[in-house]
Length: 241
Image 1 (spheres, rainbow, N blue to C red):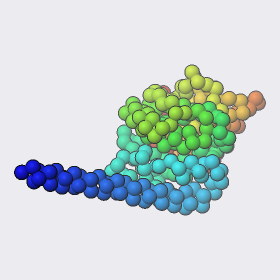
Image 2 (image 1 turned 60 degrees about the vertical axis):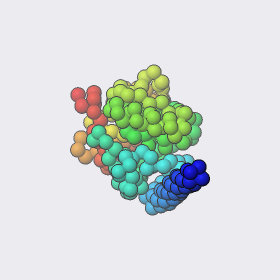
Image 3 (image 1 turned 30 degrees about the vertical axis):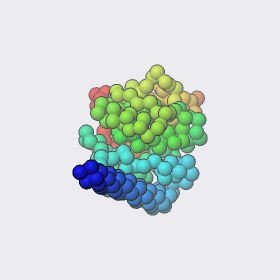
Image 4 (image 1 turned 30 degrees about the horizontal axis):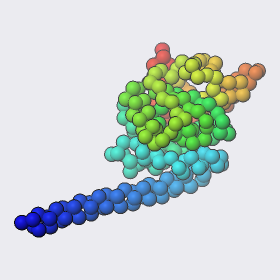
């Protein structure tokens, strides 16, 4: 009886080990697959369209975009399009993320404010390049999940806050750069005020048709430059008033 019990125990242990081993193998295969898709995304969607900043390219190759997308839609993580992330929001098209990041001309020592955390993907890209990232999300469930996700991934230079980004985050201003990932009808004045002289801000602006606008601040005032037409979710909260 003891031998039979021992045999059954060994058999169960061996079967469990096989299952764990298979699960581990599937995970490794999955990550290899996603890494291949990510590199194809960078080659075909980012570099092929003219993104040249090596820091941006390196960050886009490194950050696992599929981690920032609900499991049911991860097959679309590296497609050339936005992807829903819940609460009526989307993660931006990869090229737009790269374009906005490159427009900031980050060197590595900047303090950056992001308005519209979403799932946290843009914040992670910024954190691979800049020194400090402060990011605000008005939808609490998204803010909380992004905060946990970024912490679990090991990012220590990102601070996430739930709130209305229209007024910025005055406590940590002034900022070297500001990036806005939802479209206000006009550029919020508080964000301009919280931008350093010599700083850069990139923001989609408009109702209906939108332009991605680059704002450069100097001691003579601000200069605006339209980059391209875009389609972002509208900025909510005070921006709608």
